[in-house]
Amino acid sequence: GAGVSQSPRYKVAKRGQDVALRCDPISGHVSLFWYQQALGQGPEFLTYFQNEAQLDKSGLPSDRFFAERPEGSVSTLKIQRTQQEDSAVYLCASSHRGENTEAFFGQGTRLTVV
Amino acid sequence: GNSVTQMEGPVTLSEEAFLTINCTYTATGYPSLFWYVQYPGEGLQLLLKATKADDKGSNKGFEATYRKETTSFHLEKGSVQVSDSAVYFCALRVSDYKLSFGAGTTVTVRA
Image 1 (cartoon, each protein chain N blue to C red):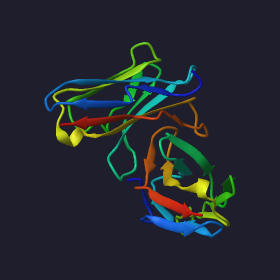
Image 2 (cartoon, rainbow over the protein chains, first blue to last red):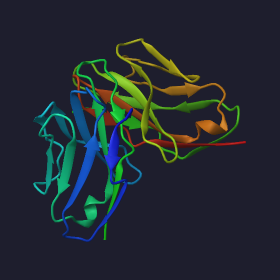
Image 3 (cartoon, rainbow over the protein chains, first blue to last red):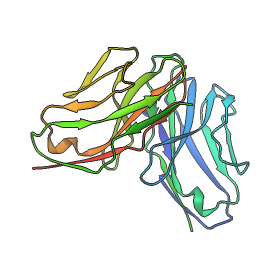
């Protein structure tokens, strides 16, 4: 597709359930980012990939959060044993590498933990 | 660390009014500055950017000037339209990857 695609758009999980969120970046984009956006807040950085290498995971809030991009294209953000505080919109963005490149965002996955 | 502080909303305006959304930043190094917009039901979109001091970014009638002396990047539009109703985020980036966002300002323009 022409843009960054995320699925599912909406996910309701019971507390303690594991979830997997998918991101299809723009074809050819080397850089991929995950952000978490709580209600009424700005996006907060979670993790960054350059191709298949995860270069920065400093924003992941706990070891229940895990992200991968095994072939340098599609990425999955996995949250284990979800908790209510994990409820947020999870945004994926991709870009070419470089200082003046634009990051293109997907529409996000809204996760609600009940 | 890097952080962005922007004017709290919500902001409600009449059509053709002047809009200003204040944004100030703290950064290590020399950041690039951005305004992103999120229209209802849509993803974040880049509105404009500036990569060095005194640069002016502009798009769709919006402008913002990178002011290093006041560490600010205020967003302005001279005459807003109903279609400008959205959430606006100020952001910065140091090095070539992660963005640091402000909390967002909700703008509603009434006909």
